Length: 540
Ligand code: 16G
Ligand code: MG
Image (cartoon, rainbow, N blue to C red; front, side, top):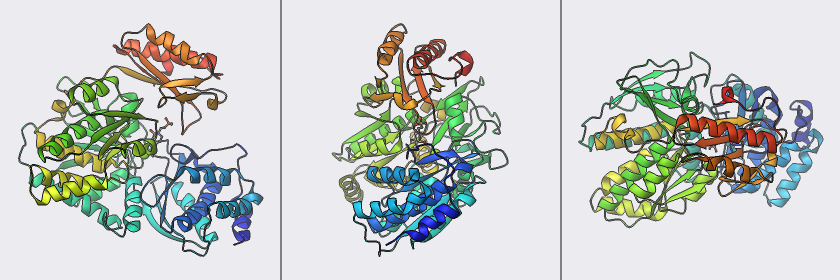
């Protein structure tokens, strides 16, 4: 097929406005929204080819997640809800970096390299977040898909996990569930309500929740969930869209700033559930009777979930290998608790859900969470079948385990499904959020960022825990860390922004702050820092 028409549109309507080389990053392309039109158009073209390549529907999500409202981004979803395959990330990068009059050539090259039958149907599912720019960018994606003769099913404003869910369901012949937005709400909500009615323990559990919707799509999703939850939870939704998206609220703000979100009343002893701008991350927090702030992040959720699932597996007499996947950002206290107290194996993956997801597949039951609240649980086919058989035979808690399985959105991290899972476990255990928080105490930690001329000079190994280049940087970090009690620190180039990230952990907050500043200075000196030298006022 000649792609003359596709190239014509690339030149006339979606002309490239950027000459910088850009790369399909951790979660696709992300930048200021006004620089994205040509990228969206080209990703529409690519999604169409990928659909022909896989003979399946491909998902396109338009969102910049927790980034500021003026940003936007795009990520492609492969047939079984996974992130785009690495070979296609490379195609995406090539296509986006081609000049306008090189678009047809790149498309032809992809077709020949991947041996694509271009007569095949190309079906693309498109979803978008609530950003004002998402509407326009959606049109650019549609223009791309249709320029190569493909067809679009536009799901409108939906959360990222809903898009992953409908793509998966459609492509697996609706085994996993109905491939509709309504089907998503119904499956997860019904499983939750059923699980709750079969569990009797209440103890310190209280169904009252303050929900921080980050002024984004998650607030809409929670509103819809409430229509299906039959009053099992008493949720009040704040930051519904009246304020600016992700601004001083939402999961990323609460996690990084370690602060209660703006816009949510400071009611003591009532938990707040914060989600991010596209509804795939969740963070819990609470103010205790003295008004002290406690945060329960992805690590705390992972430990709660892994511990509970392990208990259900054991009591059902099942021999399934359960493991937990974290990243270098996992608090050291959580890793120690999981391995020493719970006896559950822990693996460490590079940042980015796709890396954790792949590593979690080595277990029968793989629990994976980033500290930032992004994660889920995945079950192998063997595990799923064993659980279902044991549930039928009414062995131990197998029935409960099979109900838990239905509350989980396995296709990708899903803030609300994760929240419902946490609520199910707290309810079953009869725990308040403060009871849950007592499992272990986080080591004080701090994050910082440094801007350098070229962040690619920093390369890492050992799941980003060690720097390979620039020379001398890791030695410098080791030396700095050795002076701190219980010190740990690592640096990595961000996959979503043009910055280097620094993480530091130590036995007091003051030490963690100092450690972060010293390591940031080492990065600044050895990796070509630009702008102001790192100082205390730049701590995140
Ligand atoms: C993206 C990733 C998230 C990761 C974050 C790291 C997905 C779907 N999302 O949001 O998992 O934690 O990037 O950002 O993979 P950074 O590279 O800027 O630190
Ligand atoms: Mg997100």
